[in-house]
Image (tube, rainbow, N blue to C red; front, side, top):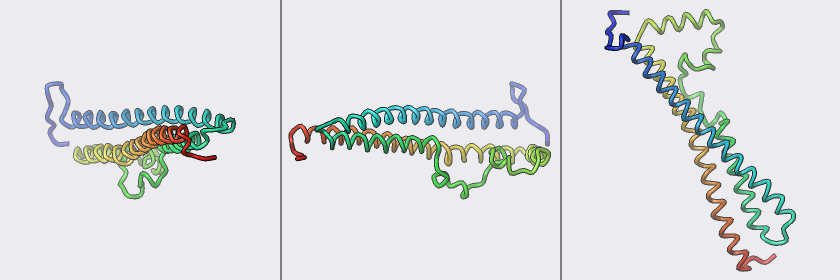
Length: 181
């Protein structure tokens, strides 16, 4: 590398850049884990509601429509939360983006560790390429990993809220005897 500039902390500009980008990718992974945790909570709540309501549905003489609505929306909400944790491939559009050399599936495509090490050494010689690879990884994590998970979790929450609203509406209608069995 050509002459490096050092800051007050004794780190080169390249080291500062790598540390910054490492922190950025770690932050993206952390917030993605938070989305996974929220999705797990949604799965737990909705599965509990579904099991309770289905068991009541077979015993109930009345409120079948309300219980059916609750069961249906809780099932859909739990299913979409499960999809948020383990996204189907078509959500991530993996074939449409370039993978960085830091991405595990791309690393596994190298025939040996030595070939991968040589590729890393080649990249490390060029600060711009190091920056590009880290930036590419941060972008891919955000766009193809975090954003689709967050979107599916939002849909799970929407289904849950709609289920609460519709079941309240059907409960009101059933209590007013607007439905005839």
